[in-house]
Length: 193
Image (cartoon, rainbow, N blue to C red):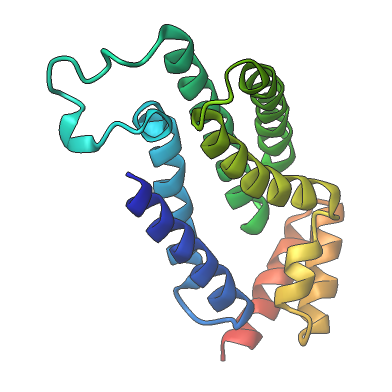
């Protein structure tokens, strides 16, 4: 599971680089890799954080050495990380709801980190180190994107296309105005040519 997480994280980074370079198909790669990473955390967090290989999950006694607290903690960390990663995807794609998802995910990550820090100080087990590492990387990126203006990523990608940026900013300021969004589509088509 850790190997698949690393591969997906590398694909996310690759997709972000391709997106900045305006390579066609980068948006699809970004959506697929972020969604897969979200699924790994949401549905595989229990196994990932407890060090249970996927091939042992359905065997009897796979969870015999895992306490109930670690099961709940791993599930909570998985939900918090998945909400934060899906919030990052929404922010990178400029989709509505990004702020809500990021705020919810970051708040849950904070709760997980506080509980994990208390438990780590009591037991000093390596179980919490993996959670801290993931929460610091994904939570840090989520916090940066949450604090940055909503158009910051678009400004980075389209820095050489001021007409598109201007049209996009106007459309975001008045999201119900279809004429402004049509202007955004027109400017985007000019870039794609």
